[in-house]
Every structure is written in structure tokens, then in C-alpha cells.
Image (cartoon, one colour):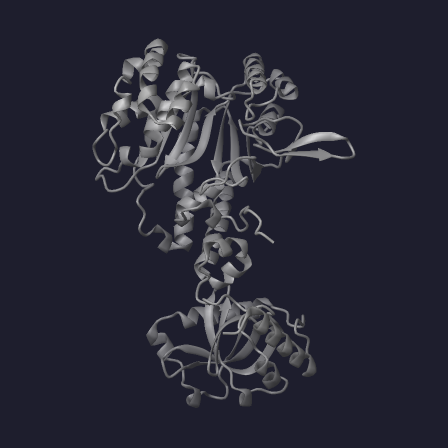
Length: 536
């Protein structure tokens, strides 16, 4: 088998033959028009049409002289005798290209064709002996030479790592991958249309921040030379968007990149896309209703374009979304222990409704757990200093991994989305306290099939309370918490001018794309995910 270098050398020789025939290996003389684009789309659609419609086409020997001629252009993905299979954004179609049917320099160009070259053919449609459609070319043009050969396994680049590193190859080698990213585009379009129709104004806020804020996360740091100023890449746009509520915009949203200097996993990439929206004169409960409507509307738009993405789902958006407090989720998990695939938790036997409401009783229950759990869990539990932290940690350990098993459709066949509500104040530095129980906040996170999709809450608009919470964050940073926020004095000043009561919502767009497109990893919905450089 020839090496890549040998194949490259042969392709460069073909490039030289093209020059000798009077054309460039990379010409730029063909211009697509609406007419040519519609023509090649028609060819692809007819190629995938019913057998009866293809049988209505003439065989090559029966082709009338006045038959309509069609355009077909794209990348050559297969050569089968005189047939070229040409890949387009709409799908594949084939052309029957015989040198004797072409005027010069067509035959010379055809002799230099390699897999992955871009070519153009024009001619009438025929039915082949196998019943397939083909463009019988009477015109042929070379459009671009590929110097490197395509993957050895042409019908699918299989090496996952190579797919991510060479996405430009992955997209043309694997049509299903290209479809995923078309579906992603459809999702983002549908999100924008949904919010635009409801009076939300799309805005842009800075990516370079002078203080760490908007979320608890470790930022990326940079430096502006002219101002001699240390800056941070945006963790979240939240504090700027809420400044716009102060300024009088009642409904705003932004879809954009955020950056967090944290780990990489199937659900995390240091650079990711978020949708954040803020609505004045609304509560987090209003946003739960909006979320249900948003998810169903966007999913409907995706399935309209790509109905096959709805197959084999283990979850449904059609039934009522569950709405469960964090403490109730812990109790539901303990009640179901040992049933329906939910594991037993003997180390949590002292956790009950009374303990979740009583700080001293829960502290004692957690203390009794420590000798009975693994080292990682012991460290997590021992690090909790507040009642709210203990409740939150128990929820993350006990309930969150098992939400799909706990909350099911009426027939039990599918999981349903679940809103987890009533988060502890201590883990929610920007959310509004609940009026009746100020140790909890008016907040929810929505999970679908175990994936956290979005976070939302009624916004804290009390500048005095917010200043105190910023001060607590600064104290946490002084103790070594790298994810704690800074004190944002300008944001406190903005709140002091009066922010209307409001609710805000942040959606992980990449995770929504994973869910609706049926992809297991965030890398499968990011065109160019961050990867460790290859050695050498």
C-alpha cells in the first residue's frame, strides 16, 4: 500500500498535468448562481427519490437530444469505472463521465482527477442499468485539487481523536457529522426566533472583564498592553445583562461564548456557548413555564428538519416536567433505594425529612456517615461548613446521578425533565432569598436525562444584600477558593439606581444540542473542541 507521501507525490504530478493542459490546479473561474445551486439540489433530491420516479428516466441509449441539462458540482468521494460519486451539502449524486463525450480540455482534466478533488459536471439525467440516477456529463471542469488523500476508510473517518482534530476531514468523510452541525444551527436559529417573538432584545456584552463575576468559576486571565490592565475572559454575561435591566430594557438575551479555566469532560469544554436571558417583572416560576415552552418549540423545529433525531430517545418532552424541591429529591432518592435500578445507600440511613430541616441533626447525620464512605466522598462531606452546603452535597451525591430513574413518564417507559428548586442560599450568591425561608433561594436547575441543561432564579436586586454576598465571596477567595467572585463595586452602584424585580435564565447551548441531536459528548457538537496538542 502506498504511503501518504507517495500518494501526495502522485497528486502533485496530476496538478502539474492540469497546468500543462492550460488550467490551474486551484482555479477560481466557476461562479455558482441561484440557478446552478437549485439545479444540483434537484439532482440530489431526484437521486434519493422513489424507484418509480427514477425508472421514469431514460437509459443512456434512449436519451433524447433535447433533454434538460443539470448542474452537479462538489467533492469526488468515489470512482467506479466511468462513474464519479460527487458529495454536495445536500447529499451525494453520481455522474457518468466518459472522455469521448467531453470536449477539450475536459478529457485532460478528467485524467488528472483524484478522490477528494472538487469537480463540476453538466448534462442530462439518465437511469443506469442498476436503476440509479446519474448525470450523463457532456461538460466537465476541474475546480480544485486535493493534495492529501482522504482517510483510508473513506466511508467514515473512524478514529475519534482524529475526527476531532481534523474536523475539516470529518465533515466531508462522515455526512452524519455534518448533519449534526446543521441541526445545531437549526437549534440556535430556533432559540433566537422563540425569544424574538416574545419581545426579548438580543444584545452583546463584553468578553473582557475587569472583575471575576457572574458565576463561581476559575477564569482565564489576560493582559491589555495599552492600558496596562489585567483582565479576565468572560465567565458569564450575567452582571452586564442585569445592568441593562437597570437601564430600562425589560427583556434581554445574549447567545455567546463563555470561558472557564476548568476541566474537560464529555460535558465540559473550557470555551462553550451560553444563552442568558433576563425578564423584568417576572419570577423564576414564570421562567419554568417559559422553559417548557422553549424546549418543546426548539425540539419541534429540529424534528421538522431532521425527524430521524427523534428515534430511540429514552426521554420525552411531551409529558409534564417534574417540579421537585432539592430536599424532596433527596427523600425521593432514599425512598426508592434498592428499587428500579436505584442503588441502596445504607450510609445515609439517618437522613430524613427532619434532618434536612434541622442543621444540628443533619450535621450529626453527616458526621456518622464519614467512616462509612469512600475517601473522595468523605472529603466532600467533611468540607461542608453550613447546613445548606450539606444539603447541596447530599443532593449531588445521592439524587442528581439518578434523576432519570426517579422521575418517569406516566407509563414508566421514559424519563421526564425535572426542575430542581429551592437551592440553599450559601451556594447561590446572586439569587433572591425566599421571603418565607430566607436560608433558601428562588432558584431552579432543569435536568433532562440526567444532564443539567439550565440554571435560573429570581434575581437579587437589593444592593445592600448583594454587597454583603460579594464581601462573603471575597472572604472565600482569601481562604483559597479560586472560583469565588470579586467585589463588583460598579454593579452595586447599578443596583443602587434601582433594578426592577426580575428573573434570569442561563442555558448551556452545547448541552441542548447534545440532547436534541442525540450526541454523547460535548465534543460531538463543537466544531473545534479544545484538545491537548499532539506530540511533535
